Length: 311
Ligand SMILES: Cc1cc2nc3c(=O)[nH]c(=O)nc-3n(C[C@H](O)[C@H](O)[C@H](O)COP(=O)(O)OP(=O)(O)OC[C@H]3O[C@@H](n4cnc5c(N)ncnc54)[C@H](O)[C@@H]3O)c2cc1C
Image 1: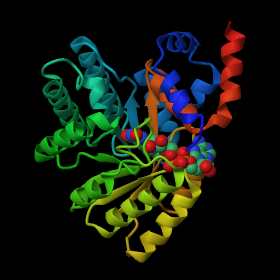
Image 2: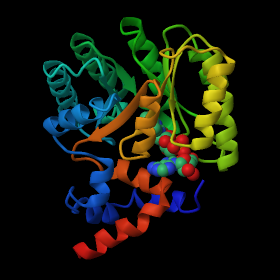
Image 3: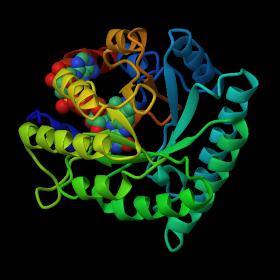
Image 4: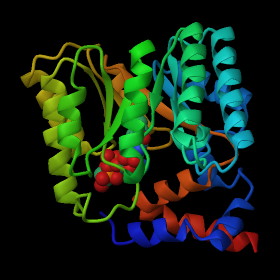
């Protein structure tokens, strides 16, 4: 992990920094390179552009740390609007949605998890009506149990609902075993939050080793693994494991973030693989952008220049 990662993730929680960064116009190049737009129309436009290159898409309406019921309901309405726009444009077969339970009420006082579950059900219903699916993003470790509990509930009515597991958590290899059953869609990523040593591997080597162990469990299992990484080493190990376990094309997929290694997205799709691009959109891009910068300190100088030129 980069030495800049934890301080950056810490800074991202500071209100003053947040205010400064949020007043940058979205068109600031660095934001635009990770978040193609704010509105449903822009999200649909970005989807059309990606699917035109033979790529699949998963769309995330940005928002987390939702503190009011009205805010949560606004996010649900945005997903419903997006899903009907995707269906109307004939894009729903290639485009699903990714949802953060915190954006739809998980952290609200008293009955937050129930509110989020009801909201997630509404989004799953709309996704099914549109002809597509939902994947529940995974957030920091304090929410893992609640998110997996919501997943179990949702899968009773919507077994197509996707899960996300983060290889940096010590618990994840066991979670992979639990979720490697037939029909179970599981996105495996490394994990994007600053987590304590008590629950998470800290060194890149340990995270990578865990990623490979988890990949083996998922690819040897009966589910549908979604291999979410930009890491060339992880990708070549995944390819070797896919062939070792005799996985047919179409029984797994690759996933990468919008703006991260776009040439690799197209290369994989052109080689016949299923490749899905995660497209975040919306006004609440701050937390998402800071996690991307924490991963790619190379982008920092560009980012700082755009901050300074604004002052
Ligand atoms: C589709 C998708 C969904 C995700 N959903 C979640 C989620 O729900 N919860 C969560 O916690 N995290 C999520 N993540 C983020 C994930 O956890 C990682 O933080 C992020 O993907 C970076 O890890 P990495 O595997 O790409 O490798 P890293 O360890 O960050 O990088 C390894 C190597 O990959 C290459 N690389 C990485 N990024 C780039 C880039 N932008 N450009 C060029 N080369 C690059 C470099 O060679 C780098 O040295 C998601 C990621 C993806 C792709």
